[in-house]
Image 1 (cartoon, each protein chain N blue to C red):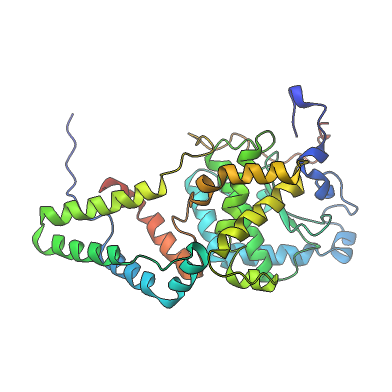
Image 2 (tube, rainbow over the protein chains, first blue to last red):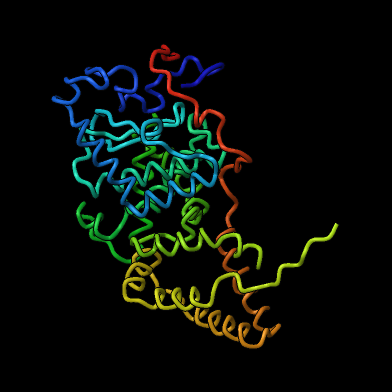
Length: 237
Length: 108
């Protein structure tokens, strides 16, 4: 939440309206009501599996740990009910990844959302990202997350009935970054598109920590190998 | 003050160059490179690097070392050709590990 000179802006201006349970949920945390009437337990289980078994998530967690941002499940992840069709978010004010328990029902989807949000967390950890005031920074992180998380894989695009092939990945990244920016900020589509276009080249080519666009678990394995080898690599250039 | 000079070695192990070459040439990579960039991947540089790496291992040839260094520097330059949008941190955010306070009223 913003302080000081920005007091007249409300939570709505920063997309917090999509995550109403960030303030007070209908069911108290840990209550029987929460267990029986929400998807909370299912979300927690899928989250645990994602963090333990997804090569993308494990690699990002390792990279963040190296940067001094060890992510703990109980502190840095939260399963909540969200509005609309949003799948997750990163709350920089609390350094928490929010997972939308009412909108994420398959393990593969959870893996991808966790990866996507971890990329935002990674950016928050390694750079001075001004999430609340700088639209370019927000757009940049969304471009990176769409690019590197598998959001725009050929398979995922097919399932959305987007049948592009040649260079389609980039179109998808642009489109999804634009949608993400519009979901959490009150800007016009024209302004959002302008910002995404401005930062696209720089951010699409920023592949940290992977060093490549991972299209498979095997790519992540290669990325992990490069990451382990980075000291040798840079000292022998 | 003197530092013990660490002997130079190729930035990656020779096996790593070979496996990158094989991965680059695979049908899977061809497909995804076309899907991402609209063109076939360029794989010959990995093979050239592998050959240079092996030559270095056999003969400690200065030419092989130069070739490898140039090739890898070009790869790094390729990834750094656009100015970053944000400034990198020197240390992680101060509040990353602070505990959550659920009882604190939310600021307006």
